[in-house]
Length: 337
Ligand SMILES: [Zn+2]
Ligand SMILES: [Zn+2]
Ligand SMILES: [Zn+2]
Image 1 (cartoon, rainbow, N blue to C red):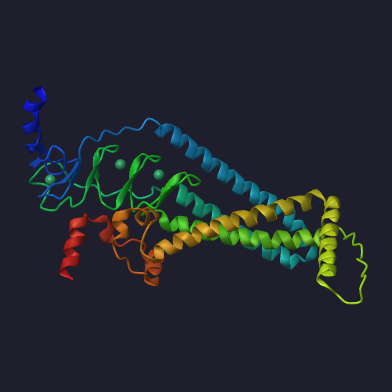
Image 2 (cartoon, rainbow, N blue to C red; image 1 turned 180 degrees about the vertical axis):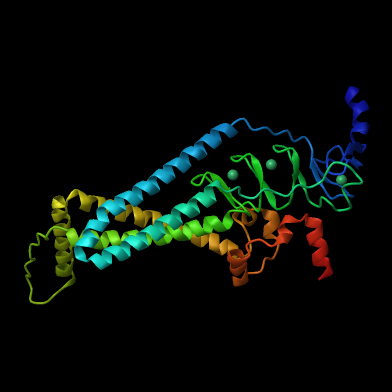
């Protein structure tokens, strides 16, 4: 009986306040999401969010940044110790040239890393909200309320649970730089990737050259040929013997040579991994997207222009000033076109 009494009232629209402009709105009790007809703010009902593990995530990020910085410093120091005596023994001019090149690459990589890691990723602009005359019509178009930050979140912003703040044009949270990649540091992140890829390529070339220069003489055992002509089996045996003799002589390699081999292998593996990441990032910029907007279903419906101008704009003038303005201004601008 009790249920019958309650059922009709359950279908009556309930009155609630819009979080954006404070105006009273009527919504269906079943609607979990509704949009204000005046300011355009989106309300998601029954959302209670709190973050218990933010301190742990911050600690993890700081540890990662320290490890990456220490690894980079170790890489640079080990490279200087292992490579330069060999290069200087070849020629003094080559030595000076490579010292200059190594210093430029090391400083640019470390500097761009620090910029990407320690620069705020992109704080959304402050926007007035909460009272009707202050918030104009469409003033909070498609804005949602961030329950972690307790403030409006623009449609182009995302809340990062590792950083604990909303990030404008968030691309992704990178644990290795311990920071988000967003509007303010995206360019620094891409420059850091480019510097690292170029540096690892340089390290791979220099370490392989130096390692081969100091490699002990090969203990090569000539392969006897049974038949008069060269066949594939003979070629295979020659190749196998050459590789084995190369590995046998590696036993007599000095410590400097072992460090060179280690630096070569790690620079090649890091270089390949970061090249893939750089390629992926550049392809998103080319189509005018970020990694997150690529993932979200809403933005994928938008037809973004595939254009090299996107890359030029990114590196020249990364984000036009309109990004920092509320979205209704931008939509008004596009209507005027
Ligand atoms: Zn409203
Ligand atoms: Zn937030
Ligand atoms: Zn983050």
